Image (cartoon, rainbow, N blue to C red; front, side):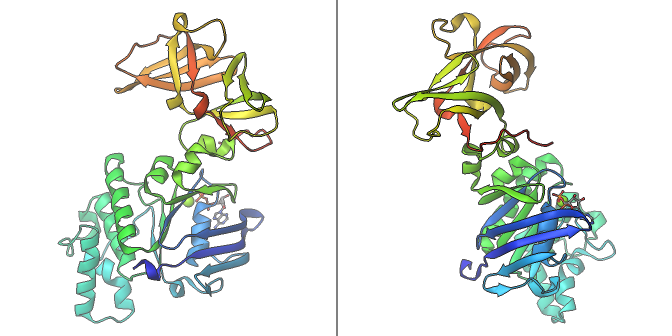
Length: 368
Ligand SMILES: Nc1ncnc2c1ncn2[C@@H]1O[C@H](COP(=O)(O)OP(=O)(O)O)[C@@H](O)[C@H]1O
Ligand SMILES: [Mg+2]
């Protein structure tokens, strides 16, 4: 089926609403048969970009391609896209079968064909048997499954999801996102998925596009965005991150990172900037170990000294905020170990291999 998957390309696409530039000269490709997520804070342009792809919104400038076909001036109905919205947008006075079959009825399909295809689409979302129910007789999760079936029944070339799980409670969200993922992979349809939830993005995506103020900040597979964020904004948006200022120094064969008075030996790392000087680091909580002050080696400062300012029991882990000379650091430790108390002086051991040096040259203070 992936043989029929479409690549979607945007070429210098912009969208203005009056003076508001919602999308600013975006060049991007969505890989055929892949699920690509648009991730970013509220107002960054995710919905607008999705609506430009769907044809619900015309671009102010630029060109949009589905495979080799330019669709810039095609209406939404002629672009052959299926959409699933945050609000399920089912017709309240129609049954599940009528909702799912609506598009086929508009196309004048025969009643028997409609029934068969509605059944097939409902089977895909594990909702076969609910044909005669009305939307208000279904849970939110079930309504969203029906909305997905309604998008799938027309066998679109492209599937677009705009925050489809935002109105669904958190337990169900996890299983629904896996269902959507499975369905998309089984059908091989090119899909674009909008969310502001980074955990959801990491879980469902082949690729993630981080958006910021109408532009693309970084694009890549989940792992590469997590381990190699190009900017502090991305480091903060994907996963949890402590962004701190540091100094890179030394010469080939013997290099160090100074975080305040603390020196990390990074001699063996081949991925560091060639030039010495001030850098920004992203420290992920999972690579910061808290040890009590006495246990640390005082002769050479390889650990970052600090004081616990917050300590919370979270079930499996303790979460800590530690005040250090380079700012407040967030980390966690297994709840099976010692619990550190507020005001307690501690040392933070940072794994030199796992420190992320953010390549952007200009220091960045992330918005939001
Ligand atoms: N129809 C519209 N008219 C005017 N401004 C709009 C319209 N739609 C979106 N915008 C503006 O464009 C920007 C991007 O909005 P949107 O695409 O909805 O962001 P997101 O989906 O990432 O939250 C925002 O500043 C928003 O206020
Ligand atoms: Mg939106």
